[in-house]
Length: 450
Image (cartoon, rainbow, N blue to C red):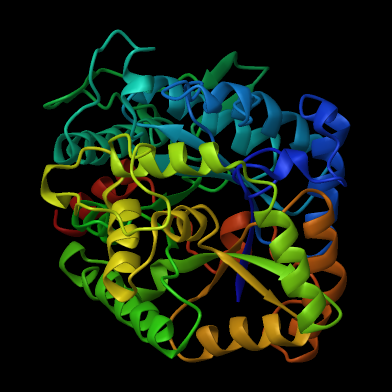
């Protein structure tokens, strides 16, 4: 199975992880903090490290500043430094297609891929909040379908720029003075709906051809982008019971079933649901640890976070009664998949507002012993609901230490996870093929038909 180590907040997967007694909250801009985490994940043979990023301080509510951690190091700076102190683990940068330009991102990711010897990945996001729009000369965020349309074109242009240089374009012939073969350098000459880019890129083709493309989103638009472009997809887990397994299998088949119309085979995409294991030596201890994590969340912060997910302030409603309205998904312009999960929780149970914000804040948390956690992961993997998992941690580095020391050996003992890295690049470790350069392919097709 594929395993990703996810850093949603620098201190862990829970919005209040920074309050955990084992977290060094003062070290969130200390390189050694991240170095320790990455080296532990590499010791655990994780395929890749996923660094979540946002382009704003969450100040929609006062608690977003006073109680939540909004400090995040810039991804390319951080991952480039981490490439030096690791050898095998993939390095995934979260980059928005709404608030960047393709040339910038093609250049940065190509450089990261070179500096890491083929370990770069791109977690493609479209962003979701008006707060981000206001940092980039806009009042409102792009409409949902428009930003996915832009994302597809953005990726197309970026891949075209990565193909600027054929793999053998550099001659570096000191005697003759020829640096490169001009016939093996190409301009993309793109003119589309959102972008006009001439090219070529001033960085040679990445070692992986293209850095690995990862994407999250279970909305209709998100699933189409996944089927067409993504190589790794972060999928939601709706529940940890048999019903959740069935939903996981259905989503897995839904996304993979869309790939054929884009000329792709099912094995070109790895679907990895997100989960936050809380590990104890006994089930009781694990549940106590989960309760301790949940207790770190101030009530007002929980309400404000749920208000953010719903797109309207709900703090005036009674905490011990159900939410008195049902949000309209069709009119929603933030994360549709996040709202879908909240609506599913509302439909499944008559939750009070307090229960709803608690569930929505910690929806990925699963408490259990190492054997119970491994049982869950193995069942989903073997029964066609996942190709692996994107693991979040209740707090860092402790939650990661527990997983590497206790769950990874159990998965290895069962033969469902590697004991050593076998590939030279992230693509190799994921079993993904290196893409052909489009210009070489066009020339080969031309010669074949001439």
